[in-house]
Length: 417
Image (cartoon, rainbow, N blue to C red; front, side, top):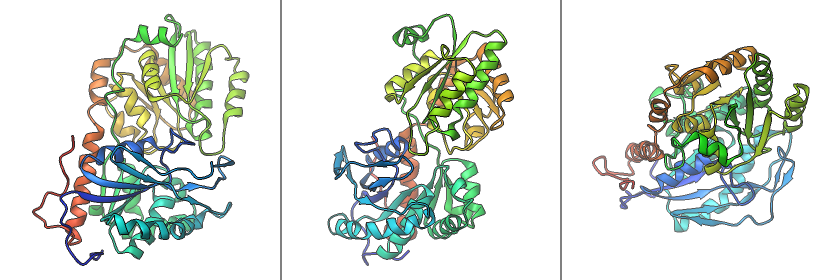
């Protein structure tokens, strides 16, 4: 894209505007933490303002957000939260509503913060809106694909919007190789799509004493424990894990399931999950923790014998990476980046999505296998958020060079520390 200012940037630090409708806010502090972690670590090497629109009414949650969600300062990050409205039932035009709502705040922001690149997260609606905003303000933009794009791609209008946006993007960042291939299938040039997986916070997720962790959370020492985490929604597959647990217990294995997760942002499946527990007669063997802080989740991972993810769709599921960093083996469905994360069979078992018998067999095997937890933790901790930030900033730097906004021999991003 052309130079928006007609002059080369002189600052040694990149100036980025992050656009994300999936970002933590006071009403939903646990929302989009993977976006927050990447941006927070990138802020060590770039000046970043986050534009995090909050819907006036969230139709998926059937919830009206608090009036006047405040703008905040989070360390080096300035976070702006304009409220926006989109109509129900016609989601294909949501990017247009988002674009129109953001024109004024972005024009105002440009007076005080001369951002060089718009960095958007998720292809729809954020990436589509970013394409329109980048055209209007004549600046480069990127789109990060995180998994939901495959579902949106099943709708013709949304697929068309993503195809146009991704082809126009200066860079498409995919968190898994499958998502990279998805972008290429929409016509994006392979050299413009980079696979940069998410990272893990090794200050929180590491090997702990299992016995102490169990005592801390009142988990029996003489029982096998399966841990599942994620919102209580259908696509996370908690109900399938419960069905598999029933089969495992019928085979004589004394096991229980601990589920960490709240209602989530899409249609709740909580009642159906509880009904499955009742139908299987497992009321005394399934424990619902609700949404828990990261520290508590790490402690539960230390307490467990295996982590299970039974999702029908994912991008790069951080919770799997975090489990591995804790030395916890994983049983997961073959979705998103799972084959990349559990490639050798030495850190987990991969099963087909929706196959309860296969899930049951894999869990039974995992609960009785002698795993090398130290080796699992070493692999899980090998991808830090600092490295992710470095890789993304490198791509941003290349974008500025390609657009004539930076001298090719300069080093744009300050060291990350």
